[in-house]
Picture 1 (cartoon, rainbow, N blue to C red):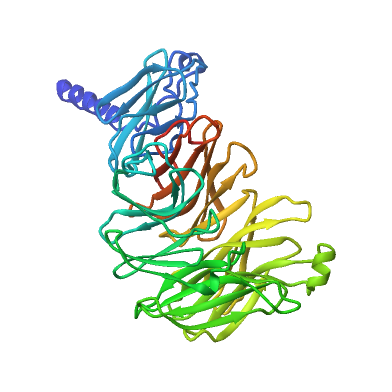
Picture 2: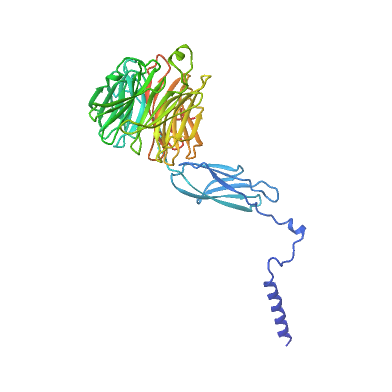
Length: 506
């Protein structure tokens, strides 16, 4: 009987011990607590600036309750990247593009207690970027030249259009076909009167390419061979500023060109001209626009609604020729005209302020808005780049003045942003080309400039590439008088404007 009571008592004791919860355990005295070492406290890990081959890892310092300094071990997958590290950052490199990576940062105190935080990131696409130096000739090195346009050909190659000169004075129209890797396929020149050193424009057609320069229009096939050449005698006057300025081809292969002429009217110095040509270059009609002292044209596009949109410059101060001759009174603003395909004005408006605005670039966006811009010169003769966005009815919705000196070309990016190419340090011996990226809300996302010592680098056109990066054809002119180092630069940049050439990236 006594044995049974003893067994029951022991069972009661064991059951009562198993049933005590952690919260119900007997409290530990302060003296006993000091003998227990606690692990590092919680901290936050961040992954910043992920590229296609790098990731920048940083974390807060993990606090040790006992006041010791913790050390860190960084894992990427199962591999240890760094051990016993005291710094709170690490660059992870030699990664693969478009890859999902996981890892952890483990904090350890001197007693061996640990606390770890996991991290995860995906690398960006591996963008192949480069800069290639090309001569302005397939068989000669010392040929000078410049590039005005860059066009993507239907076969995936690129057409760089500009002018070149073997003797440095007589400039011929020039076209280079370049593959996507920057290798020249062919280069050809067309020896017609060129007029202004800089003015040449081109347009990709169904059969090849249209080029205008001074008073000539040249139609080429896809291999750069001449189909026909037309001299537009209206512009053949041997007077500065009298020339064709731009050219486009319509859906039925009809050709529209714009240009500037002097005027015989008493109070008109310059007038704009719109001309329609047949597919074989014969003049169909011509229209003249002389609504102020100076009315000039610069760029033309055919809208998605099958209208002609022209960008020009117009005197808006009411200045007369006599007043202009006796002192400066002219005010030139950007001038936009929207016309029917028969050349009738649907509406026209001017945009500007007290500055002198000189037009350079015009595009229509996917949503039908119109973006245009160029150069703005203040009364103190300071130069700034300027750009506008308007609705299809002419209503202004954005006006931006930029510290860059010029905007030569603007293109729309896939996310409905804008990329503008222009010039920095325009009046120094080290001119640089510059890029400005605007978001879809038209805020500046980034700026990049590219230049070389004692060298002018100029780019007047840019293309958005299939990987959302950019293609640029630029001109490089060494300012050393004894150096004939003039080059055509063919550039492939990533979506942030970088390319692999350390001396040029800023």
